[in-house]
Length: 215
Image 1 (cartoon, rainbow, N blue to C red):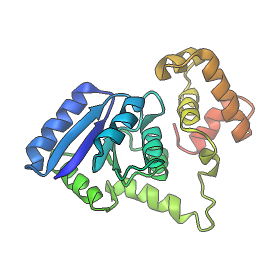
Image 2 (image 1 turned 120 degrees about the vertical axis):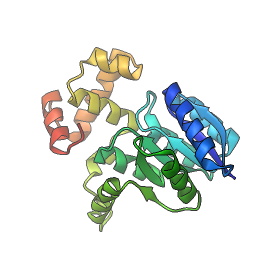
Image 3 (image 1 turned 90 degrees about the vertical axis):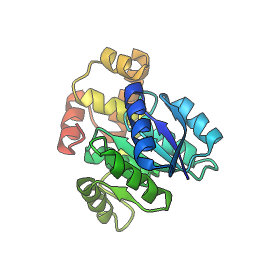
Image 4 (image 1 turned 30 degrees about the vertical axis):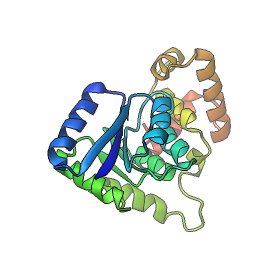
């Protein structure tokens, strides 16, 4: 029996996933918990000791990347499988760098998801075909440990979230509302991002992110 924990901030989606896993898992999968928020997820994963954690990528509070890094920095043996609507190369690479064993999109069907969970539980890496190419391309360019995402590696998970929204044209107030932060905190993160990336303003940031297909 594979113990599975769900992390996603959309209630209806969690309900659907639980239904599919119960129906298609045929007694091989046990749902041991779920969480809609990052902090709650971290605490409950440590309590419930799941075998595999299905985690969304984009959530307030640091997203799936923060969940993975925090849990794996402790004593947990949980393996993480990202389940996201995003198929952006930057999201895939960031989650794998955080420690996930695989990444599949929410277009996956129930039986395929069960098979992906089983493979991750045994230690395999699982990716949708197109997403696997992103990972292979990224890590094949790192023979000396200095990868194409070295600049991104210098940003915290929160700074990456802020950077993406700012690069997409969000105003500071809109970013604050989206990420549940104060406007002052958003301004601080933007200043930090610009400093680390050696950029002068948000227009240069948008161009930088667009060139790297981050937005």
